[in-house]
Length: 304
Picture 1 (cartoon, rainbow, N blue to C red):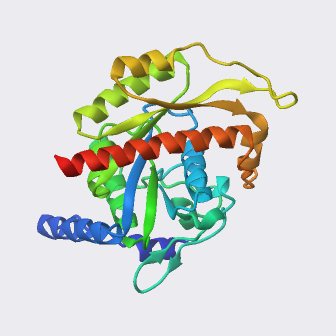
Picture 2: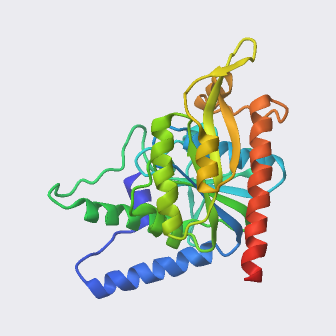
């Protein structure tokens, strides 16, 4: 797979500053060209790991696909890509052509681009160079890999592209990724009712707002626990996401319970697609609210 990876991502050269700038400029142009056929681009992020962000991304995409939209997912987590497994696409590969890399399609024709398609089983993407380099340079290396990855993927025409950002989305990533995704419609923040998670997510929302990233709203994941036998729901965490949203003047897009039966299907790569299943109905409602906000903000931006 190393050869395939190099053929898609190329080999970065840092010996000539002028050439590096030229290479980055050309890649940025290429990314913009690749994404020109995508109507709406939405980032899914959280300041906290372990809140179910990838699960949320996949289910937002599936809900959009059920409604007939053309959807894509870009799995930007280089070190822990898991979208393909949840979508039942683990083991698939990008189709490398002379024009670029075509992402495989899953349920509802959803296109997925992920580093998982470029790695052998259990192989991590890690820096193998000198460990005395600063985190800044390591971050730049990661950003360059993501830029090249985006520049080489052929998306075609899509209604929505969801970007599953890395856990925590460290300080350097949101602004850089926003520049990679031209005309970003906004970001959806994922949290749990846990007071610790809400605290961290609140800081991320403040940071995203300072950067000029539009926060479309907040999704509260694992809001309650759904009994796998009787379907009754019980409290799982203490916290008040609704109050946080009111304080930040952001909509709470919806609450998703922790549903063991539902989660198990994604672990096995056989997502539960029944539109009438209670958790899927909740995702449908969240998508409806999200799309109304996206459309409203688009109309507002066009008038200003």
